Length: 230
Image 1 (cartoon, rainbow, N blue to C red):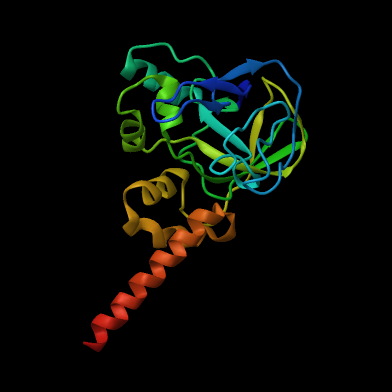
Image 2 (cartoon, rainbow, N blue to C red):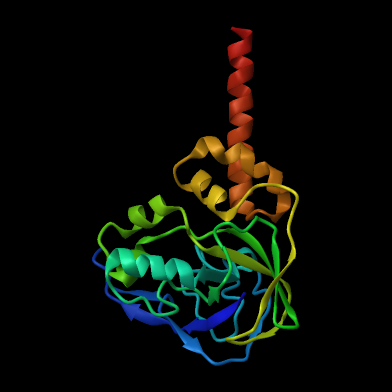
């Protein structure tokens, strides 16, 4: 398991039909490195966990719990076959294009050591947005990507340091639960009845998803109590 490609993006203006202009850093390109990785700060303030990588919309992207985005080369290859087009490393806006790692099957709270210094922790799957759809130029992409439920993973930085393309990835911790990135993604996107299952991941889960799971579970408990009293 290794980093096949380390990808950074620069802020660039794009035309958006419903707006005059939008600025995005989704167009990630491979770099040789080394690149410094560190916790960027809370969402809304902090951007990317990788030095030199632009995060323009900090309301929805970046921050400590979405500091790094990883996507598997094997999954890019599958999309290449399905879409009938080349998808170079970084095409999905990922910071890390990996090889040999089942990212969507990773557990929430799973920790990866990259190289000799950096440790990252899996927090959630990537939720597709219209910026992603426009970047790829595929009509109906948000729905199509969501339907596959292989979203890649967001990670927080547990231990900072430097990484570069070719660095090995080692799984150094696997939690004692069954909440995978794919399960969390399905629960978030279109199978809300799965949300209570995510509670097993606890505080390792992205805090926004954890709050949704707690709220949904409380509502279900309340509905059950009401039904019992009738």
